[in-house]
Length: 177
Image (cartoon, rainbow, N blue to C red):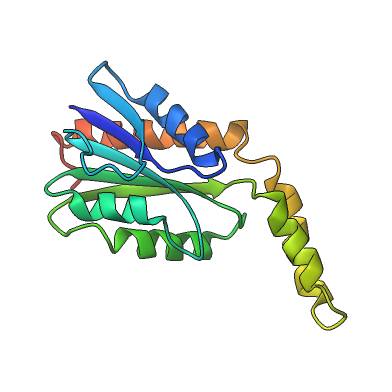
């Protein structure tokens, strides 16, 4: 099964996940590429599409790629500054998945926390007032925790996600069912 691992990474976080997923893809019939505005996404049967999160969705390059796929097996992966928020992750996946045509076979998603640019922390600190101190302090604490991500556990989670996709497809004769 020809596999494409395509991703867009702004800070390097999503690229780390892409590399981990690529390593977990069995065989030699695979490719990994950054999405940089190209229109040719290669030929593949299975696509792992990676993204960084901005305001609850993916970049234009990723959304354009998803819209262009027809009749493919597609799994999503991504990074998000917000950690430990399954409900937010589910919302992000829903927002991104909406760009995937219904004739594709959606196989699932893997999201983890990723470090953010220092300018984000500075923005949070500048927003802090006595009225919103609790909320802003929580955002700064989340930012500080994110500095260590994606970590080894996150990368292993990405590898395990790719392995589960392949196991699922093998059990079901190439279909997720």
